[in-house]
Image (cartoon, rainbow over all chains, first blue to last red; front, side):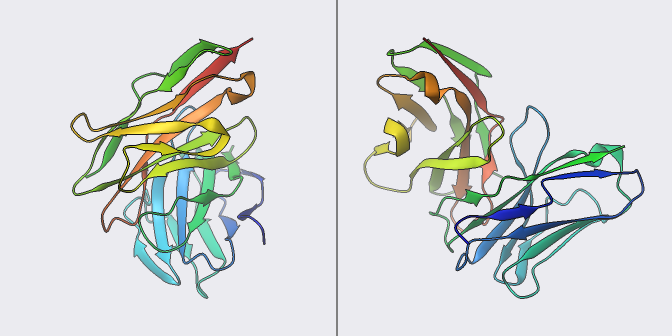
Length: 114
Length: 113
């Protein structure tokens, strides 16, 4: 597609529920990133893929968070047993390989845990 | 570790006046520096980047940024602000061989008519 597509745009989950957030990157973009953005703050890094390999997951806040990109294209961020502090906007970005490329961001998924 | 500081939460300028949004960074090795803009209810958009070469880089919508290695700064500038420039601006840094970019907390730019 023309841009990075994220779904759903909005998700309300009851505390303890599992959620799955989807990211469809730009075709040909090797690198894919997940960020978490709390209200009034900058995006915080969660995890990074190059093709299907998860090269860095140092930003995942707990073992309730899990991300995959099995075929090197679409990625899913899964949060198990959601808690109120998980409420945030989850941003997906993709880029060509290399440190000197900027990111193309999706519109994000706003997760609200009630 | 890499980090970014945007010392101003808010910048207010009058339309037609020059604007500056400040950013300082810390990173190991050569820095790759980026500015992104976020309009209300829209995703972050890439604005410009510094990789190497000329310290003054030009980007979208008439924006430019000046890289200063000795001051570890990468300030965003525009000679004449427009009301439509009002948005949230993020500076980001990426180090050599670093997969991830680290973002600042953002600066809200308000341009008044």
